[in-house]
Length: 464
Ligand SMILES: *Cc1c(COP(=O)(O)O)cnc(C)c1O
Image (cartoon, rainbow, N blue to C red; front, top):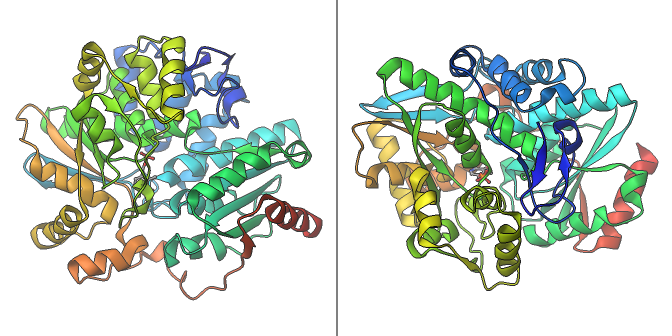
């Protein structure tokens, strides 16, 4: 199985894209074709233990390019830190409606499902190669928390995480700053998320990139997406067994990674009907569905910060499928998006998009109402990101041919201020994350300046 760039260049195997960000032509790696699997192999992806399913997915996608058995053992080791370790709960709410709870990982957001096993795979691969590396990450909160948790205390790895000072919740900051791990450097940058991202991109271009082995685990990493595919196989399998019907997933979306994972499962034969994208006021994707036009606007701050995105990076992968795997056409569209004029999809491209997807925007008021509704109707406390999916579930006309599955992306305790404002309820912190608010914090405050960040990193290496 080879991976090619959405813009037509480079072709590499799974081991080679393990720690790669974008391809050298600026595109994203996509599998050349979907793995061909038979009915028995599909059944094995729809039932059974979560770790086995995730391991099998990686094997189908070229896991044999990794050292022996690394994929499967990495997933089962990583899952030990999850509550429950057997896989995310698929909870029935009412007739035809379910919740897929991706909120019980070590840092209480779905990103754990990808980053925890990815860290394990990278650590084992480096050990085989007798190498060391340094993971760099810019975060608006959840990715940084999941990265720190996944890479803390590892022998052959260091992690450097940049977050915007004041731009993450207290809970999220504490998840990054209280591990006490000597191999983690957490930097509070006097700037916004885009500034952090900008500095990280610049760090890759410095001499230190080779010296310290800078490595990317950002949300365009294909292995992260493949690992997320596992819970769509498993949950659609569970719903099919219980109801005989396929699932339609409603996914709170930012960078389009999580929902693209669902699309892969569907392409490989999982019983999935529609995929519904939800956004907050940063509605770049719902606008595309309404107007056929992809055009980012200024990002606005909302109560669901992990979805405050106007450039949905992974959508480039879907664009590549919609444009019939035409790298030149994708290059042209992305160039026009980057130069801020945006791009337009043709009628037939829109048709191919809407065959699998639809989209809905959720305003701040809608989100507050959705949190209140879940509290009063089901006594279930949800986070403001999940609220966007609940809003869509209530607005959409039910389809008797399929079951609706709301994807819960973060635990409400991570966003207790917004949840309390909407519902009056203070969400309880689950036992496996308890104690966070009392632990001692270690982090370094730096100005929004490349040289200052470089100094902080050299200092960290000198002392660790
Ligand atoms: C990252 C994140 C999202 C967006 O997921 P994408 O894969 O970027 O679309 C939604 N909700 C929460 C809580 C997140 O952390």
